[in-house]
Length: 81
Image (cartoon, rainbow, N blue to C red):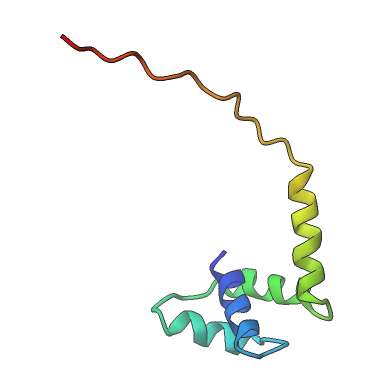
């Protein structure tokens, strides 16, 4: 997730195609070390793609996921006296 966040920060800053070095520098500025394997995989999967379309596709996938959550029970009545 830290790699995605740094990638998005670079994009928001105007870098349309952040590199390994760009993301590493962003992470390093807050004292975080990147996982080079995960970072390379992320950048490879995003290469040549429009970020807005990638985010839209992810959002569409999440919309079809069951969210569970049966509602839970209400709180017990409170005491008094």
